[in-house]
Image (cartoon, rainbow, N blue to C red; front, side, top):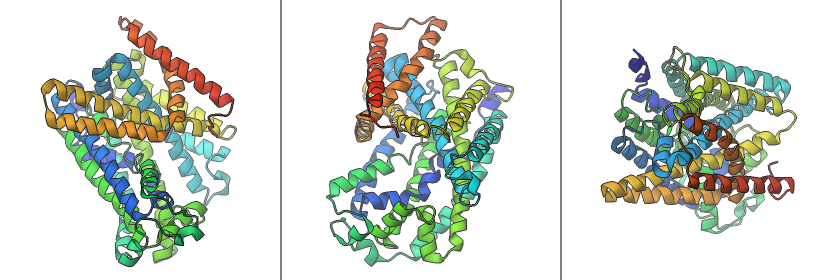
Length: 480
């Protein structure tokens, strides 16, 4: 009976989870972020680079699922295989941090959307917003606590619903597309956009800025790998990852590139900077088909945020449960499951932390910014370890093709970390230092001696964390 419960999530359910986890509120402002950074030509080059990196990640995940089926804890077990228990812990702890902190963003965005209709919610950090957001956290936690299968079924329904306004937008931009508008300043070298605040710049600068915007929208693509133990089969998890990538690539490219043929780059960027008509997608829709579309997109934002929020309640809980039970890098307490086979303790811990951060927001808004900076770089580190293990496995099996895939995966995420900046890497070290206070006791509890090199790595990270704290106190690193 227990195995039946564990192998309960279908391929379609996993695809829906990937799409829902990845498509959050960001898609509704992606057009403005792209236009603010780049003209259409450099934007397409940025997409090409990012897609190569994400495809390499997906191919690496699928190859590791096939070649190492016993490593069924997803990207954390790959990190452990590539760099030992400490590597697995760093990957898992960073991913867990990134996952639950993302829920703070969902709550703030959702309450801010409600603030458009209910003044008491303000921009999402008033007491009314905090109380409602905290209530939503616990409602979603209770849903997931009742079992992953029921949660993924609900998530599938929510995913379908939130794609409706996005599909309408996709139709609108196709019907309204004008080739002349699309090509009028293809490489962004003209000064015509200056009146809208868009400065002409070289192609590399534009492309680089676009990559920074694009590389976050695929976070969640690894969801099927994280839930491979819950999937009906390893094959189902692999298929879900591939199809999830295909669906996301089509949607993201469509909604971010085709608007360049509806309105000039400067106008779209102007919508993003002013924010007077809600999201950029809503502003484009209002300009194209009328005011009614504002409500359609706003409802889409609400459904999208709730769907993503549900997905990211599942993933952080499963992360720490796997770290405790399969990887043994956390105490068994984190992995204890209830009668529905859900990691109850992990769910409660994540919900408590989210509630605490919501309660802090009215007094200390920098708390969210601080942890958000950590989360962005943390997930890139997790992906980087996948590339390392792909290289290791391909070398051991003399697999030339997958070795090349591993090189692309590793190189891309090293580049992404470089683009993130040294400040964010130092900030991550603070979070890792906190995690070590759980890692060391767990190793002793499991009768595993921590190696000399592990102590060296932890000491280096601790020094980096202390430096980060000093730089924050002196204002060199800003978290506000």
